[in-house]
Length: 466
Image 1 (cartoon, rainbow, N blue to C red):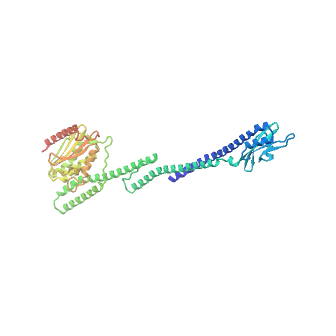
Image 2: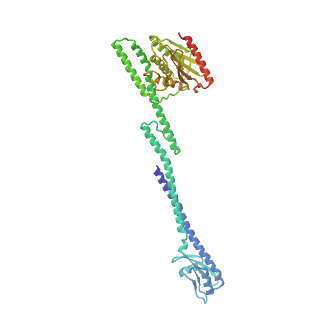
Image 3: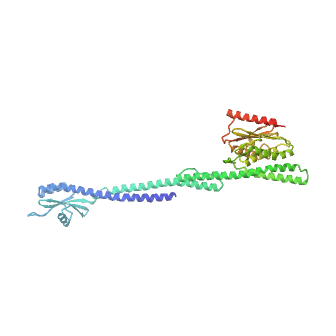
């Protein structure tokens, strides 16, 4: 593209220079010729008054000598009466040319050795006198060579300048295109961080914007694909937890040992899938228009499922705030996955007989879901919230809390881990109802409202504890 643009610009500029320089050079040559013959006509006009006054040879020779330079003038006086034809000066034109001028009665030029001769007829009483002025070739072409050299230099400068400008423009166009090609190759090789600078002509800049948007979409799709695999794998933990607990109660028979080994192997494979999929940064889209569910109904349904298992392990269960509908802008399947992840962690990381509770608080602009237990607690909540660092117990991928965090952040809320009134861990899910950013603890009003909500939930929870 770069050399093609240079060649096109070179051809166009050359044609323009030739189209203007050649006619201009011819005009300059014609102007020099006209200038030389105009000077010759002025010299001839000097002799005309003397011819009209006298016909004396000596006086006319002095006039011709004073008017002409370097024997460049001659006067041809015709014969008449007792007077013979008289030629003064140094004649160069032939007799035929002089006779033709006398007959025509108008000025003419004749080619002579070394240049041209201007033949100017003058009608006097003694006949038609022809004044001949010699115009050498050097005077006709005086300054023409210099002018043509200047025109050639200007034309060459224009051609070189246009080529240089075309080359710079070509570089400005080729470099963004080359970067776009390199970025496409890098993206094709699996370098998902490859991006193209948005610079250059408008078309290439738009192409770079489209390429970067496409690359972002590819990264987003890959991340969503890995997150889907991770979420599906993590959701398998719910039935696996039930199988593991049921297998633990089968006794010490060989079949029971085989069942427990198979469950452990299956759980190990699920953990491997989760660890493999967790390498991509999770990206969760918020629920679309019209999406949502009844949080109270989901809490009641999931607690019914987990209560049967809790009864087998001797765990005390309490539910508060789920007796009336609570609409939240969250897809039902995501809320089910989040609750199963938290309740599964309770069964997985607390001893049998440990009590747990789920509280649902409905505020004006937010809904709070509290999952608490009476277990040993989490020593490092920040590490538990970090994806892939575990939740404070060995063997955990930490993806369960990450699912919960992404659920809350998709609505503009957040997740906090702290100590519960039962003595163990409390996970608080703050679900924003209007999609605004969550109010931080730095604002006193927000703190007051959150504390009031917490007091209400704590009060209801304390009254419901067995």
